Amino acid sequence: MMRSFTQKREMLRPGKTRFATAFLTLSRFHKQKANLRKMFTSEEWTNSRFAKETRGKQAAQTMLQESFWKNILFALKVSGPLVKVLRVVDNEDKPDMPYIYEAMDRAKEAIAKSFDDESKYEKIFEIIDERWNVQLHRPLHAAGYYLNPAFFYSNESIREDNEVIEGLYACIERLVPTVEVQDKLSKELSFYKNSEGLFGKQICIRGRNQLSPVEWWSQFGTGTPNLQKFVMKICSLTCSSSGCERNWSIFEHVSISILLVILSIN
Image (tube, rainbow, N blue to C red; front, side):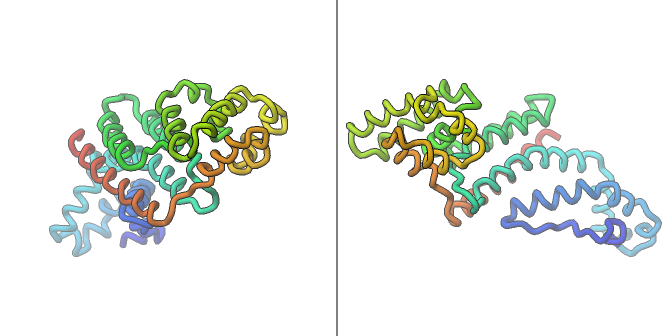
């Protein structure tokens, strides 16, 4: 019966994990809202045996409650941007280390823009920040963000972001073995920050958004060899399959916490 009202569309859409499956299924429910409500108010439903069963009555009551659909929309507004972060992490086409930090910031901005009242998402941010800071946020992510020319030159606030800069220098101290090389690398950073040497050439400037960070540094970082070697180590990193599985699992916990918040709000 349902398939006849939804143009043969199934509601369950399997994903890589339970979190992805839940999001995709909620999205399908949202798209089919009018058709599902139409089904539960149709004569076909009323005359069916399902309408007389306890579970059928509960399903009809749920589908006709406006609060149910409001909760679905709330969950989609919150989960949608997080799914995009997971797609960055799970991408096998290019190294994702230079993109994760910015992707998470963009996700939080998208969530905030979806609501007109900060109180509606502040608890959600607490859940996200707790998971992000404890399990996903590492100096490597901050360093990759800083050394991605597409982000660095288009967002001047990066240069004043203490968290990002601390992450960068933590990586330098950890990955660069000698003090002498660390000092050389620190001096070379000024060429990058001030667009000096090759970094100031128009072809290099155009390449900021045309090339991947690895390609960009490979072509234009020859004047800063110590920095180039360091950047290539970081920007070439990608998540392993096991790492992606852990990330999906982490956000599954986030989704459960979000649902609890929804219930408390409504």
